[in-house]
Length: 248
Image (tube, one colour):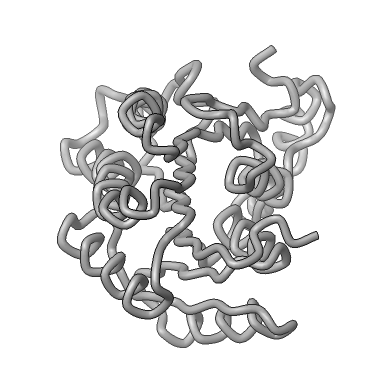
């Protein structure tokens, strides 16, 4: 299937894990993908090569989503290169976990800026293009932690909860212009980061999930594909929990 044939998508934080899986899924479904990265030009070129190996179109853009002007410049570059932006996936995110009594102001601000403010920055930056086209799909990557909270992650939970409120507000403002905005709240997703954890601990987490397994980046990518495509044309302002039933 080519559910996104002819669409231009920006995916932030696509160098690994969920972001990479989203970029791959979008390419498979006919989209042109502009992805952002922060550091390694070499790794970005390698990702470009892998994403385009079967004839797709992808290009990496070095950009810090947490910086307002950088977001504006990124969208300008993408529009100059590809003509428009049809889909925005605000996926860039970090953690700086600590108990609140030990959490520094810097740890709080850094997470809020990277996770939440970046969504404002990029959404603001694509508005002119999407309003002109009278169409668009914006997808914000939240978390089950943003729904239920988590000890030791007050900064992360605040940023992800903020994304849900931001999503609903954007959906209300832009629905009349045929621009949709939804959020995805992944649960325990097994990536290269979780590979380093103790297997017994990870298995304990799996047992606490109704589906008795952790999710995969592809599980989240499939949900993102749905929300990006016309299959979800009458869905906006919603949060899709991709969590194996954790929040049930």
